[in-house]
Image (cartoon, rainbow, N blue to C red):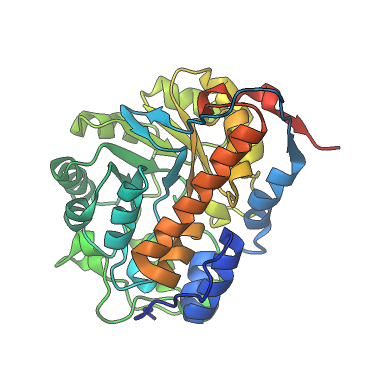
Length: 368
């Protein structure tokens, strides 16, 4: 299932959609479906993308935009533009270097990689390759000792935050993966658990990832886990998977340092609200007390700026950089980030906001 070589196009792709088409050709069907797919009818997967069309940008003119600064500050780090790399599992299925290539690309682009618990390189290996800030995305396992050990390793490796994902009490119904019998090929494992049973999937019909999550993830997780996590680490705790105002208020109450508006890329609950539509309600509930981030459906620099206007400090992308990784390894991921940064900076200039900090609700209108 791994992609052993890169496929460099004759002409570089002009946008992220062109890059996805190249990646689809390069990847085995089961791997492409795992990365691209969503839950059930994939309604929420499509809605995340389509929601951006419901908003129009409102350009102001005769503004000095001879210098545009897209940088933002986030938990003590200033990143070059408001796009982070979201946690995505099993990156060595896309390229032999996997997360190591992605970590170098993120740092070279001046942004943050959020490394997955289910990475195919260990957090120590990723940190050793990283050229910029690194966060660890965390799933809480039934074995709290195993979870605690991973948090301690991440802190020792120099990670700057722990990003707790709360959208997977059980696995969503990902029919593509079940149909393809999704599994990890020989030679690829969940490297954070090397030498332990959690490094590999159990034998099971259908998606072996589904069986792994049923066996390992803690479905009894409550808000208590946030306090527990804060008690075992000095790092900021980011909660990923907040989509309602009610949970946004609870996140602040329980001491979260930031939240990510996320429906897991449409891979969990099909029929859930698009994240861009949930974003302003979460931002209103947070009321500036902690940073709000968002993921889901971002494919253009204009999408990034629309999210900023609706209350996000920054966005995260997942699938787009996997397409870059599949096509051309580290250079492919860098290409994705270069394209997005140029689009963000161009959009800021064209709407008359020379800095990302100047983007607010006045920059956006509802279409029609």
